[in-house]
Image (cartoon, rainbow, N blue to C red; front, side, top):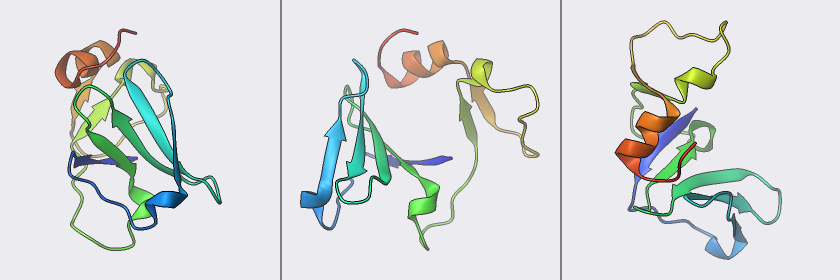
Length: 99
């Protein structure tokens, strides 16, 4: 589960973050010390997606979007209704590479 954090993201202790170029369209940030995954960032528009477990407290999160739904296991479903996007739809809306 990740939260859409937009483009205006800052970090305390930025010197401890390393970035891995994970694809042509995105990169991932990790803590250099412990390896914790900190973010997924789209290169084209600099949108950050961050694991919700990173936030102890903060703004109320709303679960309203699922992406790459064609890749989820059959047994994996949520009780609430959300927008569902295939990988192709996700890339078309947010930018990035092709599947």
